[in-house]
Amino acid sequence: MIADAQVAWLHFLGTFALAGIIGAELVLYRREMSPSDQRLMKRIDLGYGLSALWVVFTGLARVFWFGKGAMFYVTNGFFWTLIGLFAVVALLSVPPTLQYLRWKAEEPIVIDERQYRHVRLHLALEAALFPLLPFCAVMMARGIG
Image (cartoon, rainbow, N blue to C red; front, side, top):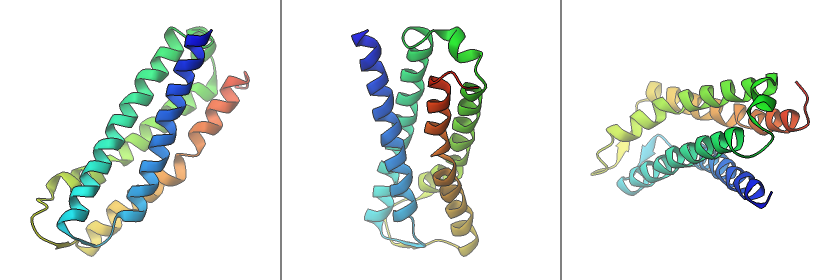
């Protein structure tokens, strides 16, 4: 029982970290980026990836070893909606990550307007869709769906 609560807590921590990181990327991404800004965005994005993996692993642990048992989750429509939304948010994070990886962080840059809008849209969509994940989790936990 205690282990179940601990794994749930670790899962929530990862989720909160992801929410904060998505917000940070949205706020800090600008057309003009100094080398230190570029390095910061790369570190934040690494945190995003590690937090996402944390959420996946703790989520799998909850489904298969803790929580209410795999059958409770896999038969719930909100569970699959949550999984689908998580995948969409993860896919939306790919273009920003690819842009950050291209940066050399040796000199200030001005991002092309088209590329800036493209990445900004992905960040905004991540931020808009992410709050639906806890909604699905709450509904699922109450046996709705």
